[in-house]
Amino acid sequence: MKRNIYKASIAIVGGLLLLIIAVFNTPFFLSDIRPDEFRGDYTLSHSGRPFLEKSQLAHGMQKWMKQDSILFEIEHDIQNPLAKFKLAPDDNSLHRYSMISFPKNRGSSYYRSTKTDPSYLIGKDEQGVYKESNGGRAYDQHNIDFFYHAILHLFEFSFEMNSADILEYIGEKKMKANTYDLVFASWETIKPSADYDQYIIWINQETGLIDRFDATGRGIMPFAKAKVDFEYPDVKGAVIFPNLVRVNSAGFDEKEIMRLRLLSVEQN
Image (cartoon, rainbow, N blue to C red; front, side, top):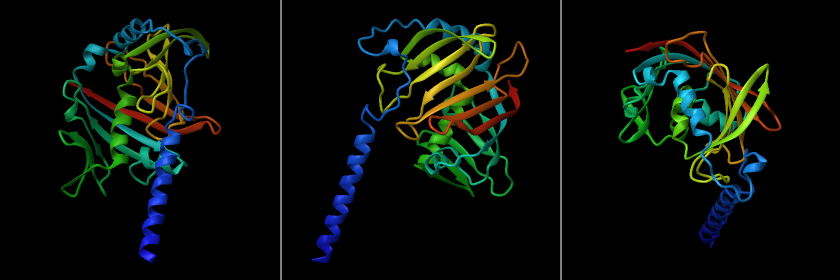
């Protein structure tokens, strides 16, 4: 009798969890950062693609293909337990990594912890994303998988966003004495989707660089939003990576939760 009650309780709890997951992945609960003019019956024009292509050239797209390695450090102040699990693979608030990323062969990209104790490597091969420590590899760790792709996404944002299916020009907007061309980006559908994030990309008209993007946070919580600001070194004729990336939560408690600082870059 007790065993039957136990099984029934497990089934009820499991059913409730599935119901909660289903509810929170319905369009009503998904964050949506589309401008008002993109709601309702909207016909795609793909008017934003030329702006992204021009921005890629400004960031040094051709030289990026020869990218070798970078050294960066991460500092975080993440209070939300789920966000911390996804974005902070270790318990320290400051951590330093070297990243090897070959754009022509994404399977060779990896981050190496520059800690001496304990040291580890986060990489990707044909089996997926793994964490390597003490000579062993562990796959299927959801926080490590998200961290791997999220950090790569931040540093290579300007070069990969032209792959979006949907790139719609929003118009001009001024902020802090700069004028920006804004582009809405997503994949497959312009409506909120549990599978794909939405972005609003801010392209500086004077420099051609992406100074900011607003985004949904599907990988963390379906209703989450974020704002990411980029700062760049004053260099020309090279791949222009941000030397400082500020990740801010957006919503009721908007604040900076993570900071990535670029320390050095090496190219072939």
